Picture 1 (cartoon, rainbow, N blue to C red):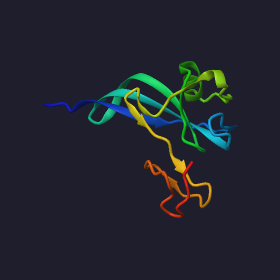
Picture 2 (cartoon, rainbow, N blue to C red; picture 1 turned 90 degrees about the horizontal axis):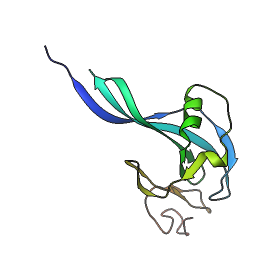
Picture 3 (spheres, rainbow, N blue to C red; picture 1 turned 180 degrees about the vertical axis):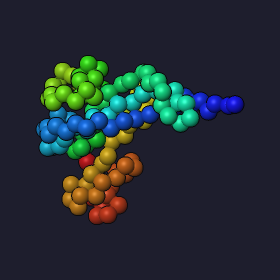
Picture 4 (cartoon, one colour; picture 1 turned 45 degrees about the vertical axis):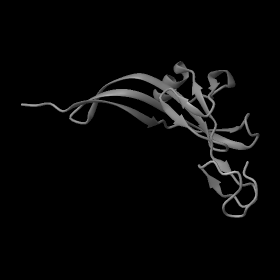
Length: 129
């Protein structure tokens, strides 16, 4: 008899929406909350999870924040709450907590959005913000 056991990192998007005015770019957007974790899987089914961390990403500019763990757990349990600025710790682009975060650039003229690091819009040629 043999067992298939593995350790992997995972991400779970949480069922949470909050409309906000972004403190980073000043645009109207919403918070998307997700949890990252490390899991021990048995036959490809996660059995144990640890190293849970909670993050918030804005829909307007893609800014990522680390969320207070207690607030994150309350969201997982299904509580209806509002994320306060004190619950967020801003993360800069780059490698943070084993995950790579980047900023989505959006053309204010034509609406084209790009994950790549373009200085000018490939669609209309204007400077990306």
